[in-house]
Length: 468
Ligand SMILES: [Zn+2]
Image 1 (cartoon, rainbow, N blue to C red):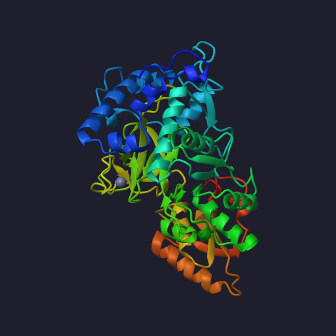
Image 2 (tube, helix red, strand yellow; image 1 turned 90 degrees about the horizontal axis):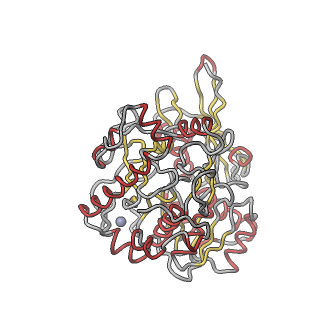
Image 3 (cartoon, protein in one colour; image 1 turned 90 degrees about the vertical axis):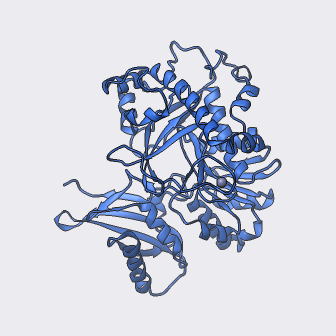
């Protein structure tokens, strides 16, 4: 668990053999770590957690944040004390950047005084203002590439598979990190096409067919878009590709419609820009196993900050067990999930998250009911007449009453839409427990609002409410 040796030549910056012993992947991962007896796994987590706490105390952000709460080094003696640590969220990171621009004081690396080392740079997705910067040391980066590779391995990716990566390339992490994981730690060949903004969707389909891609990494919305474009522009049914795996992040999207659209199994996963992949489906696709040798995840009640019982929804607090730059201790991800009950038939001992239901900060309260745009997406995905594209608009109607209107694209060419609209509104009411309005629009009509054809960070909620 030592820091990186001070060399700025990448091959000298790490002992790769030691790294792979510490964080194995592939078959070694499944045999040695994925099925590790629970008590041994807990011991391993405890050791790594205490080392991570020690490191975090060296970082000004934590010294300040914890100090303000009256915490002292040594107060936390193990994972049982995790609940006593005050969480933080993106607002604290924004404040950290304002306090110490341009990097903030959460990295624990100061380019003017720290020994040189090869650093990777990415940012969080930011919808307002500049996104948050994040630096990765060689070891941080490689552990993240390894967890990315594990996710691929559990989805059945093997040497010489041809895996097309359609995530955005640039400031965000997902595209490049997927490539690093595939390329360095699976033996598969990544074909990195980026999002529709990097390579037009038409061309992406040509690439897929010409080079016999058999694994596809894409978000659900883009999987649907690819299949639509293949059909409308080439008269081609993507089921003919015979893909072995769709590696995706389902969120609240339903799995089955995507699987039948592509005739391929879809593997869910969860991750963040700062941490990389935190949890992923195993081959049984019955909940996402957290990589618990690299993360300690809690699902907590947003008010009490205490862990919720298995099966109950709560907000995820994430703690990293390996990071040197910007260690993460009880980060409030704002993502809502729940723990699966019981153990997985695959033999994996790492606990499973059910799915990601949505973001608690993207949640809209309509007449006292919490509504996740993601849950609306799964209702839209049920509709055979739609291509699954939608966007939610929230506006202040009269008397400070908020109304949500969901624009949904109709791919059926129906002459009369009144019936579709009424049926959809009644389904929304049934699933969400509150009335939202539906507006049926032509294919492509939501694109300028969601950014579907230009970005992989798709917007599903446009909040136009005027503050009361
Ligand atoms: Zn499993």
